[in-house]
Length: 90
Image (tube, rainbow, N blue to C red):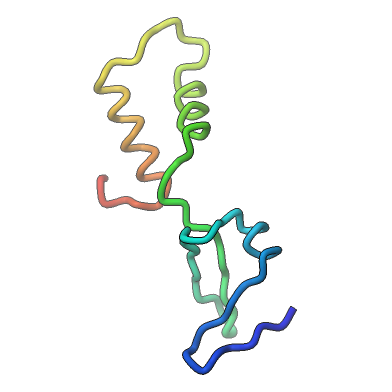
């Protein structure tokens, strides 16, 4: 698919590409420069969905008959934040 660059240096991705990336209006994408003038476009997920957070905690404590302490929950939150690419909490 070819995309036309506007006079303001902008281009629009069609709904099929946005669906493929898993992004909705208002969400961000990440664009990285690659060799030979190529670009890599991917979804930039700054936040986890509730389901993603539930799955993270479920797998973190899978098989353990223990309850998480506040410190363990905070550590898991920081780990998720860092995993999302927002590493300023490290």
